[in-house]
Length: 217
Image (tube, rainbow, N blue to C red; front, side, top):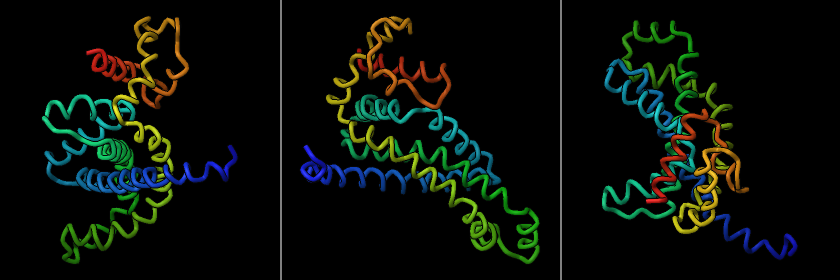
């Protein structure tokens, strides 16, 4: 099949891909700005909530997060979520946790004296943030935020496969390998796609074992 002959099939997948990417990007940016601003809050409860969100979801691969959002939370809450809300939610939660550091770092890069001078002139904290800090920090945010958007594209293909039956059947060969406790006997070709993440080995093994227990239940 040539590219021209396969173009209709490619166009069929373009719509869902854009939907997942744009939804995940908007959610990630919103969560990144919210968490980045909350970390500057004088309220320790709000700062603790932002730190907890970042510490939790930044250590979860998107694939494992999809498993939990599909298998665990809907039965617990007694609701049924579609594949697209799950995919968009997983991309937003994961991307927002990484984007928070971009927002926080850009705000911290603005010289502190500018905020002090604005407060000395009688501006409120909100006015200082909106009129003084954010316009300057936004310029510094643009390059790393662009990189973050690029990093959201590969997980979109995983999020499109959030349908449980297709997802489990495609990666079912991983579990015999895990049962051998990493000895390498019978390691399937799909194993690197599941377990090769940017997180540490201990956390990765814990997440994979949890997903295995869910699927075997």
